[in-house]
Length: 241
Image (spheres, rainbow, N blue to C red):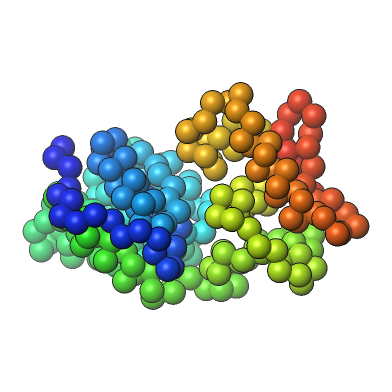
């Protein structure tokens, strides 16, 4: 596949970073797209087929979805229909080499909010997803995660404990989000590497220990009960009642 045309460099440090799920089976195109979105300041999850993508969509809250029309295991339109049936309201941008009017109509009727034909310019894609993200279709009551007196707001990307605000860096927020979503269960280092660090680090690196230590200092210091626990020889766990 020919990669989309990059007609302008991605904007650096967008003021409103979004969490975006990209479902794209073309590896080179996916790497190119994810790189551009991250350089534009967004947080990006990636799936290489429809089944994995649907699982990620149901597992985590995203601001925008970018879904390829033709996917292995479960095609893009089926993914979108299933998402909508499960109550996911976040906007969807469909990518497709099928550019005729009938195909665009099918995509929109399946629940897509916008349709971009391949090849495309990254600047146009970025403008479209930022326009979609500004619609704020996510219901605020569905964007809260809790563990005891700790609360994460996935819309504002803020954290409080006992009503006290806790300032986290983007990676710390993503780490805490993953731990809370798996509250009460042991999360291994491998799981964290795959879901928080995108496989970029050697399993023997101490980067996880450093971030967990910093996170523990922020969410547990000054409180009677420690939420973030180290399970010796296994991994980490967020306490839940």
